[in-house]
Each structure stands twice: as C-alpha cells, then as structure tokens.
Length: 294
Image (tube, rainbow, N blue to C red; front, top):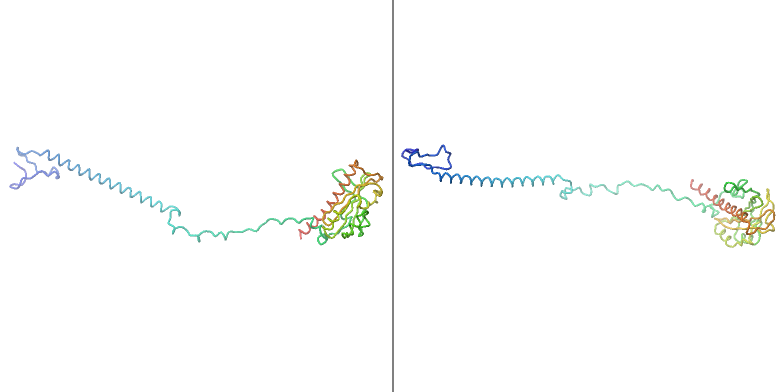
C-alpha cells in the first residue's frame, strides 16, 4: 500500500521539503532511502556554510567601510592644518604687524658736560670773582684738616699778579683777568692764582709754556697771613681746566726755604691745587644743571 494520489505516479522523496510533507511508502517493499537523506543533509550543510562564510566576508567589508568613513569624518573635524588650502584663512584675516602699537623712547638725554660750560666765554656767563670762586672763611679737607682763608684779590691786569716770564705768557694769550686767594695752616701758606681767558685753547697753550721754576704768581698776604715766598724757596705748580689756567705757590711764613723733606708742606700745596680744580669744575656743574632745567 502506498501513500499518495491514487492512480498517479509514485511520489519521490524530496530532501528539501519538511518531513511532514514527505511521501512515505509504508509498504513492506519500500523503506526510506537513508543514503539519499544523508547526501541531501550534507548538501544543505555545505550551502549553509557557504552562505555563512560569504555573509561574514560581507560583514567584514561593511565594518571596514564604516571605520574608514569614521576616520574620514574625524579628519574633517580637525583643525585647519588638515583642511584644503581653500578653507585656511588667508593673510588678509591675520593681524597686520604694521598696526601694532609703537612706543616712543623714554630714555633720558645724556647729561650736559660741565667742562663745556667753563670752556668758552659764551657759555660761562655766571658771575665771577675770587670771593665767588672761593667762598667762606676757611677750607676743611677730610674730617680734621682746616685751612684758614686770608685775603682775596681780583684784577684785570694779569701781569700785576705774576712775575718772572709769566706776565708775558699771559699777555700774549690775551688773559682777561686774574684772581688770587690765600690759605694758611700753622706756618705753611698757599696762594692760589686763576687766570681767565676767552676760550680753553688759550688756557691750554699757557699751561704748555709755563716753567714753574721761573714763571710764577705773586704770593698774597693779609688777613692773618704774613708775607711769604718773597725771597725764600717755595713750591709752585701750574695747570689748566676749561678756559682757566690755575697756579699755586706754597711756602713757610717764617721765611724758611722749602726742601724735598717738607712733605707736609707739599701736601698743603697739593690740597689747595686740587681745591682750585674742583671749584672751577663745580662752576661748570652749576651752569650745566641750570641749562638742563630750562
């Protein structure tokens, strides 16, 4: 007895149909074809593996494409260094260096040179006299050394205050006036003489021509200072600064000759020579300061 349609062709086992739809032959002469079933099952498994492998490859490709898209998107969101040149701001969008703020120099001008103000008659216009150049009644050097101030003298006749070859030297170089002042300490006296010229070149020329052994100034006594250096040996010096030539003569008030052993007396003369220089320089400083403040 067979299952199927009566009178129709005998139904065959279809490996692709579900089991409930398979035509089973229950006759004693027909049994399921187990070899065919096994072959059909293997065929289905192979097809399933192929489909799975193919699907996996497609999934891998899809994932790779998704990663690539993500990388491209990330690069697009980076800064202008990864953008095309058309997206980078042009130089017109950058700050203009020419518009940067500028600052004027605040450095102070160089100070005026005091020597310039005592080097020419045109600049050296402050009042001038022996009393102005050497003020006060005494000079203190250091902390304890005091020199008492004696007489002062001003003259337009430069020859009258000098002797030896100095009168001619001063006259030849157009000396305009001569100032003198004297100081004393114990038995040592010093007279400082200052010759005035119109310019520094004249004073410098005088300094170069003076012989300190023969071209000297006359000592100035009075106001507590006895005559000195009228006939005794004395120490003399000469120098120049600006338009001024200045001189000293140092000796003993008791008439004693000065020798190389009288170092204390030499020091008195050096101190007064230095004082004369500092007073002339100070005169230049005062005028330079006044000019700077105008």
